Length: 234
Ligand SMILES: NC(=O)c1ccc[n+]([C@@H]2O[C@H](COP(=O)([O-])OP(=O)(O)OC[C@H]3O[C@@H](n4cnc5c(N)ncnc54)[C@H](OP(=O)(O)O)[C@@H]3O)[C@@H](O)[C@H]2O)c1
Image (cartoon, rainbow, N blue to C red; front, side, top):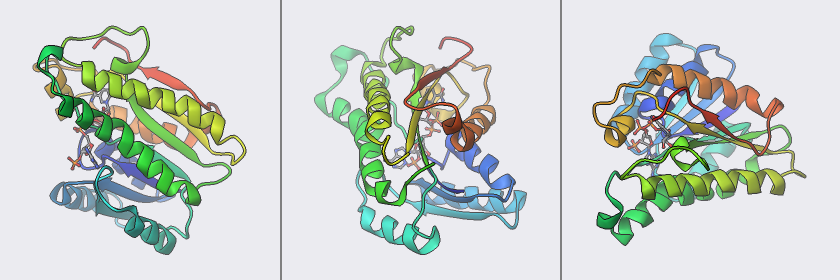
């Protein structure tokens, strides 16, 4: 499969890429803003599977121009994307009273509009049998426990959850499946920012493996679903 994953420079996205390259069955394009961290990912991936086909590209889903990415897909992915994992995300932890309007803008841009942009840009490369997997959060899952300081972040994730359900319906004719994993905690830099000192029972590599597996198989069983992936709260 030809797979694109955003937010691949750290955390669960980094680990998901390492899982995806192991089998040698997939071509993987790993996107994030930090070139140095992507270079490290590339080195580790090649160490694990010297024959793996991986492109690690510095790309900002919010601000960069998609024309270059589209050309790259045409040239290196034969113009076909089978799986798009929208995993990139940013978190602001601040009491609601202290949040500025720009904080809300940043959360919406990074956790929602950026994903809208990449989906719109790559739609032309996706067709029957392809899968868009959005990475949401239990924080944005209706009826879940909520936590102080995470209102802007959680609301932006809720927008992504609803977008998932809407697009699954809108893409029925093209045969593109759209799902969302609303993650509970996994031990990453972002978790430390959200819940300083908390230790998750789930390691980043475990969640990364789950995301990788679901990205390539989940659309055979689910469409338009926002699935909670949590054994604990937070
Ligand atoms: N860990 C958890 O407990 C947890 C719980 C619920 C949901 N999630 C979700 O899981 C996803 C991964 O989070 P994580 O915990 O693995 O955190 P992380 O280690 O901070 O990873 C976030 C990734 O997103 C990338 N990113 C941020 N903005 C970007 C942009 N504009 N363009 C491209 N890449 C961008 C970051 O790389 P650069 O800075 O290099 O761009 C980084 O690779 C996020 O969507 C997060 O909301 C995580």
